[in-house]
Image (cartoon, rainbow, N blue to C red; front, side, top):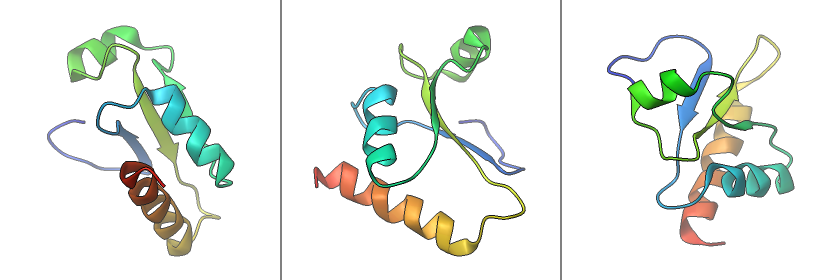
Length: 82
């Protein structure tokens, strides 16, 4: 969400799945994310996220590119219904 992305935090939603469902599926794959409004419902309203909020992934200095790949592949599988 947003016109320009900078930083280590990614806010996203997946098709018509609830953010909680996406977070549960990622958790099953050993990926820790947060779902909902993240204490900022007005920000979510401004960004136009779904009614239940969005999923937030945050990366830090100890994450590697393989962590980003793991998230991307997991999201691909969730979208495919796998």
